[in-house]
Image 1: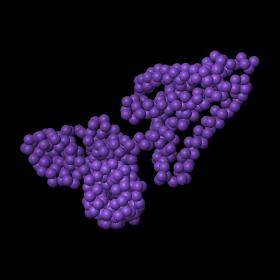
Image 2: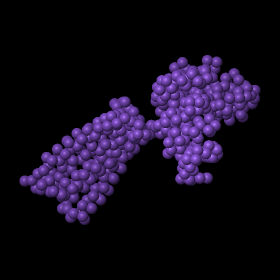
Image 3: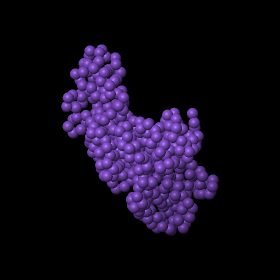
Image 4: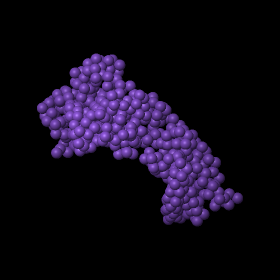
Amino acid sequence: MMHREELLRSVAEIVRLRDNAAFAALAAERHPSDLAEALAALEPGAIAPLLTALPTELLSRIFVYFSTEEQNALLRALPYDAVIALFEFMAADDRADLFNRLDTAARDRLLAALAQGERDDILRLSSYPEGSVGSVTTSDYVSVRPDMSVAEALAHVRGIAADRETVYVLYAQDAEGRLCGTLSLRELLLAPDDRPIAEIMRRNPVFARAQWPMRTAAELIGRYDLLAIPVVNGGERMIGIVTVDDALDIEKKEDAGRLARFGGAVGGDDADLDMLATPFRKMFGVRAFWLVLLTLFGVVTSSFVAAQEEILSQVIVLAAFIAPIVDMGGNAGSQSATLVIRAMALGDVTLRRRDVQRVLCRELPVAAALGLVVALLESALAYFSKGLATDVLLVVGLSMLVCTVMGGLIGALLPFMARRIGADPATLSSPLITSIMDMAGVFIYFAFAYAFLGDLLR
């Protein structure tokens, strides 16, 4: 099998030669994800003819692996007939997402060319708000009636399985489309032919509502170890399923969103910034907000340090240790906050007082041990490199210890405080925690300095 570099060179050469036959042979052998990665490095106009020459089913499998921006560019480069065929072969949830990204004229033109069933399906799924369970729901599932026999259900599954995204779980629905139960394909195959579906299905299955946040569906899939979760609308009728691969995509987006919020790179509408797609004005505005806020913290901190001119003039070497001491507190706080936010995301801790106490009891000895280690290390390095007196070493060591412990405790508590007021814990970004500890750190540092070196001022 070709390595990645070989594949990139082969695809580039095929595109240069416009060799449709060679590209079709390569596409039949390689995974669609590998091909999409290789093609993404080339111009959409150059690869569109090769993609158009592929069977539409294969084109649709490759297309979903392109990024959103790449898909939008390809839609503009592909012939209109190829776009129509692409929509017919794509999974229901993927084409609904794609439909929402089209402008009004393109939507109207597309709907007019699709069959009635596909048109209704797209309009129904695309009507749910972005970020809801309904927006990631697919209608490509297999349903059976509770009054069917096993033999009838098997014949029904064989007849429609080729057009469905997954057949490993079957959903029993009544005549009104309400969800009655679920059963696996294995259970169906092992049951006697004359046994009714109602007797072997699992009643009261786990389900998600279309209007819920999409992360709820992902959490339920993970919690109950499901291959897919059924989705019902406000009228209790089943509209589709969210599959485990969709749940993985949701978790990936959620992780990226948490990272953006933790780094102070999210807009006021809670939309993550995109390095390539976000307009300059929004990119500037959001990042400027955080930097201005942190600058204000910095001004307060620097003003306090400037006011300590008297003691700094007597022990000038103190200035050399301000940065490492306050940085250690911020680093410890960021580490602690990250671990707590992760535990919250996994459901390991909640807002219960018992969980808060467990986290603090766990963090305090760890932070104390870390603080002791870095305090001894900093003091030893200061002694051997600068030959400092004992009282100065005590100021440096104790400040390092207290800042590390305080940073760990503040980082552990801030996510709980955010959750208490109804905010996302990740919005307490790493820069904000660091700035808080910068301010607290200089107060701690100079408090010890006056305690041990204050006699120099008399």
